[in-house]
Length: 565
Ligand SMILES: [Zn+2]
Ligand SMILES: [Zn+2]
Image 1 (spheres, rainbow, N blue to C red):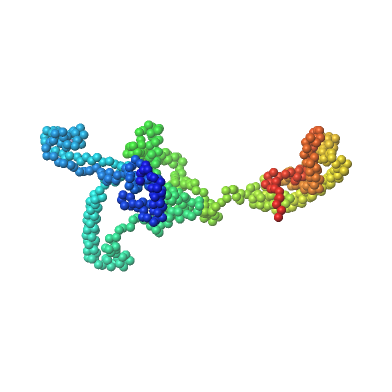
Image 2 (cartoon, rainbow, N blue to C red; image 1 turned 120 degrees about the vertical axis):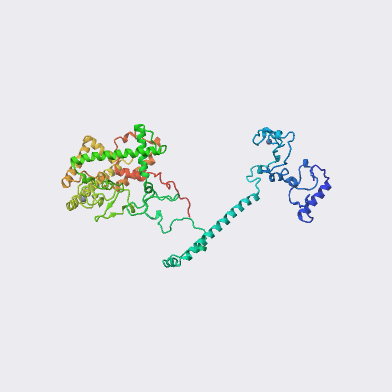
């Protein structure tokens, strides 16, 4: 089916009809060279071979990788094999060994005193040279050339060893059985004691590998507290002591284990070696020269102890006091970093097994028996529950303080009521004035607060401030006389005054008017900003501004519900 063949229109039509019939299954499918059916549904560009392959019969061969050859991967170098064994030296063969496959300079044999060429003896066998064409895979095949039959020899050897071992074991068991049969008396005793003799059948079984004794408590179960020593599951170690308060514990952590035996002495010796090398220039090292180092270290220790003993003896002779040095000094002067708390009866409290706050708790200062903030009063604020003092740095007054607090509370309450009254009165007066002004000149009404400041200016600058200060001082003095622990007035007292709601309403209305007015900047009066100089904003006005101001943080500020259901 070469694509270059010319096909007339009739032939083409015939071919088409055939194809259709094959596809419909009316005619059996085309067969290739090997007698395999060619799928009639495959498109032409797959079934037709390129012209340069000169395929005339219908075939799918061109779709396979034609360069592939499998025989190369099967072959490998003939290892350990020898070729033809010559008996005489041949011309052109290796002068050293006599093999014809290589020259003397490539010979792998030991250079002989006299080569095979001259002796004509011990001619080596020829090498088997194979020209193997490796494929990509066979070149990289790890087990290429491996003969599985070779391994059978190893298996046979192992089986032999196993057989001998078994025979030996059986012999020993027979011996043991014979011995136990001799003294039946002891055997009975063993059985009475509950020790069942292991039968020869049982003992023949494989011994179980060494495991942790299951009755032992696991390290991580010794102390379940979260503050306890950490268990490293990777190497199953627990370095710290999980039960530091239990001296009878049989496990004190891996660190404790590490500092037992000769380890401590070795560290001391190492330290001594460093010191000696540094200070005296001695060539000591417990790794490079362990014997010398140990000897020098021991001598030094002996000298030191004898010297110390001599000095001590001198001191004892002169001053006495030998009895204080009897016993183990480590026990007498022993200290530990471990913090411990004790109950009144002397038992140690388990302080590590419950959680505590990270803040300081239950700390009583200045003789108080309760903490700061344990008491609260509506008029006096926070204080101590023990003496009702609401000054943190005060000393506890006890019952006396509680009585004083009652009078303090009464005074504070009275003061607050008075202040409220005053504020209301002044607010009403201002309101009346404003109403009058608003009726006269609704457009250019001067704010009441401004009017007030003008009045003050007429009276003299600073007079108002003096007045306020005088008032404050008077109040403080009165309070001081009543309570020596209460200094100054609460700073927020003025803010706590209630706002005059009517005043706020008035300012809100005014602000709305101003807004519509000031929307057009051209209509703004000349010097309209200058008129604001010296203008004092009252608290009511500020509140009104807050209420009318658009809240930009409010996500629903611009929301308009246009849908009508
Ligand atoms: Zn050779
Ligand atoms: Zn107190």
